[in-house]
Length: 161
Image (cartoon, rainbow, N blue to C red):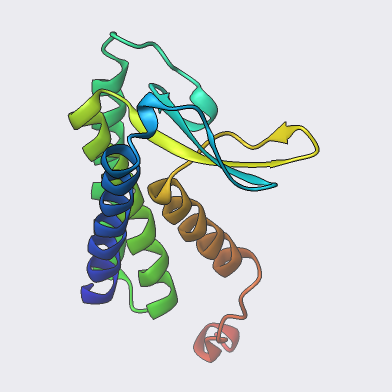
């Protein structure tokens, strides 16, 4: 539980510090995209919906609905974390919780999620994202890896019943 919650707090802190640095320090909302490398830009995108902008309706009740859904998911993840005895799973759950809460903070503060990392290649741009989105993605990938690929110890008492 401590590992997962510690990772969640760390993810929230890093997410909010990076958002503060980019939104306030670089004032990215009031400037054109910043080319960092030939394949990476900093841009300002306000995401009023969920992944890839789905359900985006600025000025509606959608942000409050998304906050409620995210908090329910976080609650389920905390229960899972409470029962978890595996450090890898605790780390993954902590990343998902921290990422979800980082984006919830944005929805409370701004009514939308601040996305600004723009990765692109040969004219194709991945949808803009932030640290919270990355934490969620990495946590989900670890959970999928664990469920689908990671070797599980065999429980012999079930084999010989």
